[in-house]
Length: 411
Ligand code: SF4
Image 1 (cartoon, rainbow, N blue to C red):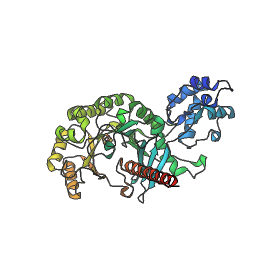
Image 2 (cartoon, rainbow, N blue to C red):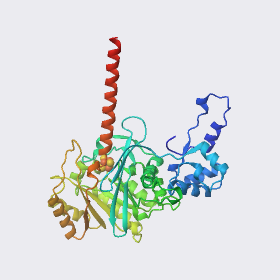
Image 3 (cartoon, protein in one colour):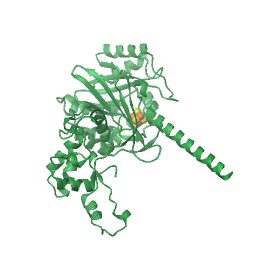
Image 4 (cartoon, rainbow, N blue to C red):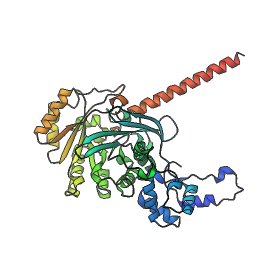
């Protein structure tokens, strides 16, 4: 089993089958502990008749020492380790492609099922910061995406399915492990400093799995990340923003990309359901909930710069009006064109002049550095290429098999 929690009683019942039963009937899918949040794992241990503090111990081994073999969990009794070995596993998604850029950017493509559509990607971007080196990981939450934003490579791939908790947290686990695989277990450290839920998919449409995964990111028994360093980015699923405010305290980013409804309906179609007025009001409720909390002092506004589409001076003026009552930081993103993209990247001058207008109006406005260009860091782009290569390899194999068949039939 690659993903979710199965009840212990179900596992035990299957395990208690007669030893003479056929092998295929006794095969038990193991429970993957990688994705469980602490409350889920505590319940799992209690259901097994074990003390719930075992959950914290096992979580530390998994998420702080990056161990996948129960035999290495030396503070757990041999008897319990044997029991866990029989019914559980710690399994990250399979890496089918990885690429480390000269500038330190790392990118992975994971296979999360059968079929050519079952690929997701994760990108890690390092950057020097006054507080030290930051390693920010952009995590995917769905295979593909149903929201079909017109500038987005992932949107063009359509929606396949939601990722499980193990598949979401597995991306963070793998990124950390990539720095530690040659380090002795007890000397391993957590290397990823920041997470943005901004990869493939709309995270608020896979709500429970994303929420539990973010809880694991914040948990001191797992990644122990500061709530200011975990950011959920949404295209604007308004009711779920309100739900998230009740459930967890993390940073919020909005993929805005247009300052008026007419243009946003075209670029981010979910805007037709939750127009800007509703979206901005939800952001204000997010701020108002806990105004003193540092993670809720502002919302980050993401704005992709599309040449001749949303980068005119009047768009900057509309942004100023739209955001005037919302404490926000604006991040301008130079568009990263993908094959057959219907848009181009705004010129450097245009981006700088857009930034100046917003900065002069008092906004903190930054331009995202383009990173990892040599490894196709635009969201969804690498998955498309890996899928293309897989498809071509399969077509080639089929062709060779057909030619062999013809040769055989010709004697
Ligand atoms: S930008 Fe985000 S929400 Fe829009 S299609 Fe792409 S992945 Fe989905």
